[in-house]
Structures are given as C-alpha cells and as structure tokens.
Length: 188
Image (cartoon, rainbow, N blue to C red; front, side, top):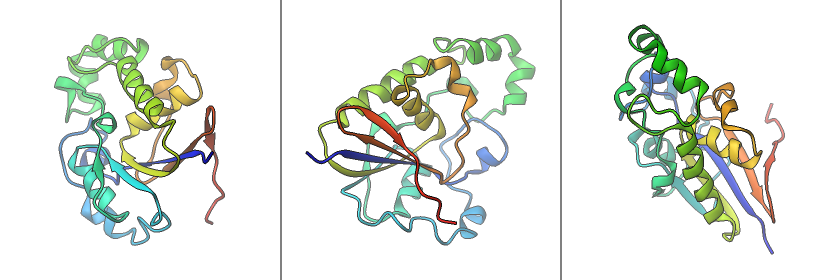
C-alpha cells in the first residue's frame, strides 16, 4: 500500500508577521514575495493541493499550481480579540492573560480557540488523511504546523510555543501505519 505523504507549507509572509502581530484576514506582503521568484517550484506533481480558508493561504497556494481545495481544519487558530495585536500590546494590556495562554494549553483568555483545542482539531484532520495515499500539499499557518508536530511527535502541548515556523517553510510528514516527520535533503 502506498503511503500518505503530506507536505505542510507555511503561507508566505504578511505585514502582520513582519510586525510580530497575531494574524488578520490580510493579503501577502507583495514586496517580500516579489523577492522570491522560486516560490512554488518543486511541488507541481502533487495529488491534491489544500489550503486554509484565509486569503493569505489561498494566495500562497496559488503559487503552487491549480485551484486549491479549501479545508476548514487548516484554518488559523482563532485568537479572538487578540487578532491584529502585537505580543507587546497584549503584554501591556493583558499580561496575566497572556502568561496564562503561554503556560496553559487549555487557556483561551482571548475568547478564541485554545492551543489544546487547535491540536485536537489538527489531530482529527491528520487521522482523516491516513487512508488517502499519495502526495498532498497543504498551505496553512505556523500555528497549524506546530499543532501537526505536537500530534505526530506526541509532544505535550506545553511545547507548542517553542517552535518557530518561517514563511514558505516546508515540513513533510508520512503515514504508513504511523505518522513520521521526514527531514528533507537541503537544496543548497
């Protein structure tokens, strides 16, 4: 039986990311993207192209080919009233709530989705892919990719905030009885 191969790609940079703000419904940073003409090459032969519903994931997915299928499970973490705010702004206005969110994966002081809930949502989605062989390419968000790692590596959700995911970075997962993280050869 052929394995399920899942390549998770982080959406391209947005102005909010550049300014260290929690995500908004915003387009890609066109100036940054223009400096990366190679974006999207190397993934033209995937069986299915998936993306989250947000504009930034749909625009990034367009770099990789055909019209992507929008998948709600790939949506960014709902950060409620913190959307668009910087960590510094939240630290200034709600320091205890921010610390609770950083320390407790079940906490959602912003009124949105907790890290633990996000990890469960992404875990359920990964389970749904286990009987779908072939190569899937999914364009999504740093938080969703972190949640996938928590599930695949069976890490405690308390490690969630210790992972950095860069714009347009790729992570490959394979399922053949068990999910595995697969390091790829450097293109350099």
